Image (tube, rainbow over all chains, first blue to last red):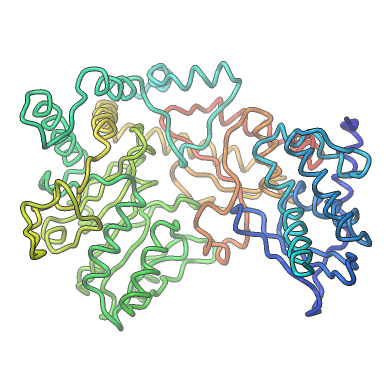
Length: 145
Length: 409
């Protein structure tokens, strides 16, 4: 388990200085608008995948600390990774949220959410952006097959 | 004299809150139930379980009688002229949809206008979007003031010969402002328009006299006014109900039908109540109405106004909080802590044992009016106390972004 003060610092940092924030006006990006699952967070995530690699991830929207920071952190984790590796990281993240055995090493700063599963009302916040990334990665993968 | 401590003793959930170290400030979402209502629901299942209006045996007659008495109690509560004007539905949303479908879709045509406000709950505007789509009628909005308050002059300006339906909430679920319904119905009727009132947030708190206010339709839910969930009411003037189509057809709503497809519907309210209703819910609702009448709706309204005024007064002490409905008079306080996202504050309040709601509260088009996409809504009802409000105020004084994040770890 990550120490609470460290978790708090990581989340605050990614909330106040979100990485990869701001959308791209570029048709080569895939895009997901995530607003249907909750009436409060409204996030759009974009992703550029080329030759099996996540070249870029970016996002923007109106969202709480947990959804902004989780989206920001995950964007840093998968950017530059192969699609397979990105999906593996996201799978481990979901395992953590679902309280299954998971590989904490690959999640790096995303370990800040290692007790999020105890907060029923925040799970959706902690997965909204990640879900968008997961969907786009899988769509790319299905298109390749 | 209204004795809130005595009232609190009637609500078992108040004891549960003590055990869980919680206070409940979300009665605009749903209210607690007094023991007598809970007992009544239980009694139906243990001593009175039979279907209504169907059996040829005493048990069924007895419960049918009680069900119909609930209608009479409700008519009395609203000062309706006839018990036949009370239609039981499964909630306010269902009642509002019934009016839109049964009246709006039947009688509106292309070029007609439905007049509403930007402060409506989804349940009172989405059904009219559908009416507009199906009939070609147009929806127009009464301009609200910049702070979301309503001005009768703006309503007069918005009214014209083409308006056939005016639909609005007596009390908005986000801003909590009380609409001048009596003036509105008077003006609307001069133009021959019918007035549909969403009473979900008003009937629990305000003494409501449908004759005095001259409403054509009034829709509200039992669960927000001490009764069970799964029950709502459509009040409608009898001659309007008589012209309307039911939303559902089926058992209990028809007098006879034949193989050629001819259906003879029963008279209102029965033609609207196909299928077995939520019998235990209606019986429990009757008890809730009796409980409210015993307290006296005048007293409930007076206490609600006092408590709300105290709430607003105390909120003004907070420099770190912005209140969006400072002119509200009842139940609802909508606010944000400056520079902290509503849901983060709500998570912190939850951790501190305070139940309230964050979000855009099902009135999504209001965003343009108050300029805040997400807010926190705290709402009080007849069992809340000043001490509970004090606890919220003290908690809000100490809220920081770090504490909010900590609440989710």
